Length: 139
Image (cartoon, one colour):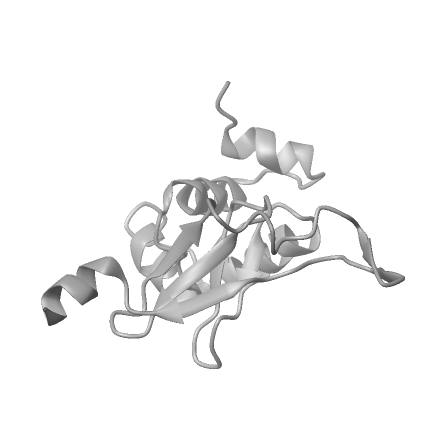
């Protein structure tokens, strides 16, 4: 059964509002790991009064409640991912696209909550290089 934005918000104890539902739905259906600016530009079409501040505050709430993750892959860009299951990300140094990596990363992502006595609350694994599309353009 596919989970809806409403299900995810309620499941993470976040009160659904039209803005929160629209932002979560966009995040769930985006394959690009969008930034706040990208979300604002896209969502403005359906919600003309939606501000970047509302998006920022909403995403902060999502992250604090575990409904989304904030990706700070480089010092210039912060993007967001509705997939909170452990997985790695690949960023293309040429086109800046962020791609989810699920296969082949199982050995580097710990399956435990503690490591060497430390309590692990979150973890980010990033690979950087040139994506297959950009690599094809180079050859």
